[in-house]
Amino acid sequence: MTKRFYSAEEAFEILFADSGSDSGEDLEFLASSSSSSDESPERRPGPSAQEQPSVQTWIPTSNFIPQIPNFTATPGIHVDTTGFREIHFFKLFFSDDLINLIVAETNLYAEQFIARNPSKYYAKPHKWTPTDATEMYKFWGLLLNMGLCKKPTIRSYWVTDILYHTPLYPLVMSRTRFEILFRFLHYNNIDECLPQSDPAFDRLFKIRPLITHFNSKFCQVYTPQKQISVDESLVHFKGRLRFRQYLPNKRARYGIKLYKLCESATGYTFRFRVYEGKDISIQPPECPPVLKTSGRIVWDLIHPLLDRGYHVYIDNFYNSVPLLKSLAARSTAACGTIRKNQKDLPKTFISTPVPRGQSRAVCTDTLMLLKYKDKRDVLVLTTLHGDQSTPVPIRGATEQTIKPVCIQDYNKYMGGVDLSDQVLQPYSALRKSKAWYKKVSVYLTQVGLYNSFVLYRNAGHRGTFLEFQEAVIRSLVFGEQEEEATTSSQMEVSRIVRGQHFPGKLPPTEKKRRPQKLCRVCYAKGVKKYTTHICETCPSNPGLCIGECFQAYHTAPDLKKL
Image (cartoon, rainbow, N blue to C red):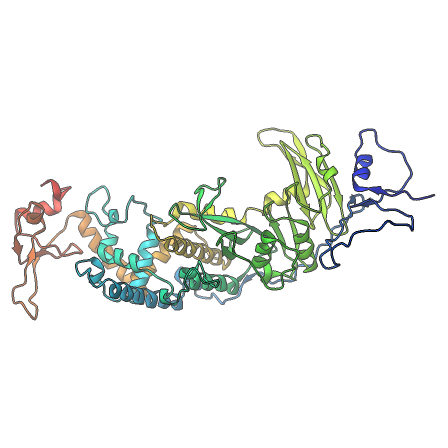
């Protein structure tokens, strides 16, 4: 029997016609019509073989068997965690080397700022004294604790008003010291930054060491399980910034976008990339030239996990035929929704309506394209699944519905990035700031904090993320003598809360035999009066006149109203 050739459009019309087709002719699904004749008209010169895109031959999925690679990775922690406490897990990412870098760059930036502004002799920066690692750990402990104890402004943490009073903050560090540390917080030497007109200018220069450090540590310490996902996160920022993004489906909507690869089960962030703008070229290693920008992002994030049999789930922003074929060639299976206007997809199949609750599928040698109708059409492109469907319960009803397995797996494993963000959201320590890099650095530190909690649970420990954070913050604030410092600090806080205050005298100094301080209460009344007496219980040791002033300071709700 003579074989007749059809174009792709004609073939899909025959295959999905309501009346069906009883013809015994073989159907050839071709991207363009072909002829069996040896005679061919003259053709204009086309693209070279390297530039010519591969022709996709889509056929029914009656005998399609997905080629799933074997999983060869060894997931889990790659560090001996015997005897580790919470702070030790956190320091796997927030290490002493990173703290020393932050200390060095913060001190350097403070010196540079003061040298460039010599006329501002009256300004607070000139009260600057160099910081060290111990103080920087305390600073980050207080900053992370702001995610647990929410207040409207930074200054609210140091007020003595009974509505806001938090003894921990004035006990550990003065407000002016915290503010000046936050002002000069830096991660790179700005003198080495290239001008914006330079082609090699790095828009993320200010936090580049931080990005490099966390990306390296996240990969070294832990290997994720077989199912992983790629999606976006958004750090809220509404200031002026060239690469600020608007994502209406995110809670923050405006901010700095990060592409993240996370473990589906736990939300562990394995790799991430900060969006720098659409004009920035992405050139990941060993990347196939056929991939566009969205595909290159996925390739860049997943590159350390290629050739190990991972299953990656992506949404329609990234998914494409070239990407899935390139991943399949590197023993990596993928599944994700796909936009109907993507190239290399059969247009007639996509436009053919499907009854609600049903699905249809076509395939190539390695890919399967499935169309499912629920409330609206859903297109899934996968190298992981066939066209099988199983019953699933309907929420709020007793009956069940039939849903394709690929869509069930996509819903189950796509939420790794969202899981990470959902866990961090109630404890976000982000503060309002005009400096975008400070907000990103705090966010990345909290991502590292959550990653350390995942390791903590993987090591067999129990406890919630809140309890884990509390233990880490105590260790950061009080250091190695955590238990002794916490006990003595709690005693002092207890005295403050219960009103146990004891007056004392200022000790003599080298220059003064009888040093004096301004009385806080008199000064609040507009009277400049000095005294030799202080309150030894209060952390700031305020100067107070013995008698009415001492009593008023510890009992009045607001000194300004005296």
